[in-house]
Image 1 (cartoon, one colour):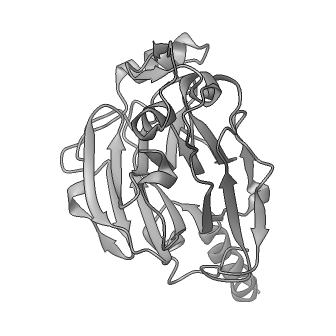
Image 2 (cartoon, rainbow, N blue to C red):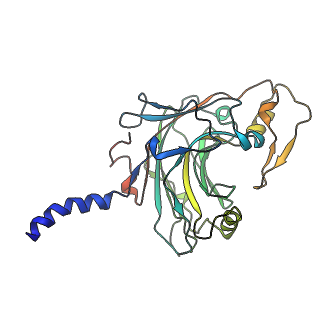
Length: 295
């Protein structure tokens, strides 16, 4: 009798053990409060795997609230899955994202710099980590700590990214707090061996009403351009008069409300496709080559 019960329970136990990995479909995300969402679509053509992909689009002048003032605009999805920074060392988390890079993608489309996916802590101005692009390739930034210049994109096709990150604040010798794989290849120069969440992050988060044990963190993916004013001033065919600037809390200096000026030129419409987005506790759980498609 016991053997029969064990045979019945064993597959269930195995399935429960594998259930940590989350395929991130659109319904498991939410929109950021400054995101432009009117052009978003679930598409069935040009997908990485399975039947559908997520299409993001943003056009010149489209922005909301503080983004408009600071010279940014975005169309981003936020995962409904949250992480929390702990003092003691804890297990890492893994994210997988596949992004289609158009053949004509370049500097003009990103308006000098664009985030493709990032993680932010509630109440903190700067991202904890960000994978961004200047149009030709991608770069990794870990808060104020490190910038990692990497290879050029493969354009006209899908690019698969896997990020391993550890949000612990305890330093453990030999541990890797950030790692990145691109199209199945580990990019060693992106590996980070010390905690990148600092006391400054915690203090900034707490100053916005969050307790020391609830530093809420989530990953966002989509289009986020944050140097729009700089870009427009560089390519301008007209020079607006009396341009006003401001300095953000991060120290970044921006042109205030750049979309309100007539520069004689506009930012091209940017379209990006995302697919096979996953979250898990190991590489094998989120690897595109060993898991069912996300639809």
